[in-house]
Length: 301
View 1: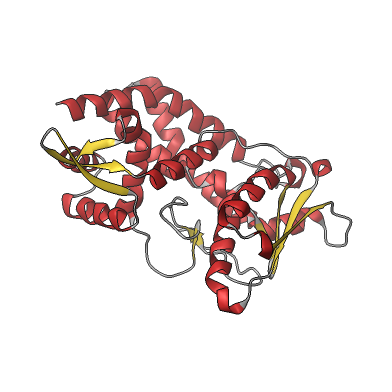
View 2 (view 1 turned 45 degrees about the vertical axis):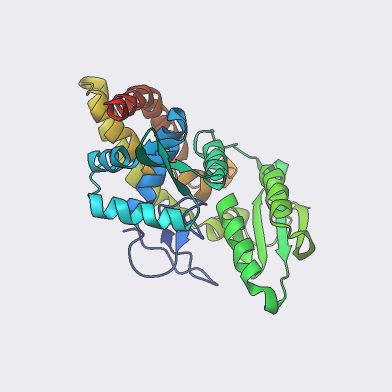
């Protein structure tokens, strides 16, 4: 486990492995491991359920999760929790009990796709920053937690208490999110340029905890490079592609949320972000089609 440094203010925590629909925050501040089956099942549903019409027989969903190493009791428990969160809806088709993705789950997955499967915009210092300040009355503190969570998922770094910073290109996503929440009255947004006095690379490193992020990139590269080399030298079958695609996707999905495309000149030397992205997209191009073919055959069988 990668441990975070001790930044000022609330602890940054470690990556949950989650998604905006499954976790309140991209970072876990409590002790204990996140619910791995619950998170993996969302990866499987998002990547493979939608191309098949958004519905799967429950027996096939349990079977697919077994292929990636999740036992049936854990899968059924994860399904139950996803039903409680209105992500999966029970539905019987042609006499088969199954589940379909809810409208809220489909919307969340579409939004996640735009982040996960897009190259992160590489910003420049000249483009500037978007600065967010918010003030929520104590009687509505639940909204404060919701807003903070949304800022974290958008890739903002915390500059100070109630003050958040991100590259300028994120502003349209921010405005859409605030309007969707109906939180306009609590939020003030500025366009900003750094004038002083703290060294800008040091400020960026503090707000986004770049050393911890680098450790996560190195960890991803180690696993993904091994997978890529194996497929280059000795391609596997469709089942192997499914297992490797789910694993790679699950390991990758954190980076578009934790790394908002900071200016290259502010990053540490030999930053691993681009190399990690190149490897992820190489593996996606190689694995996605046979993985989907495996799932279609598995469900049809």
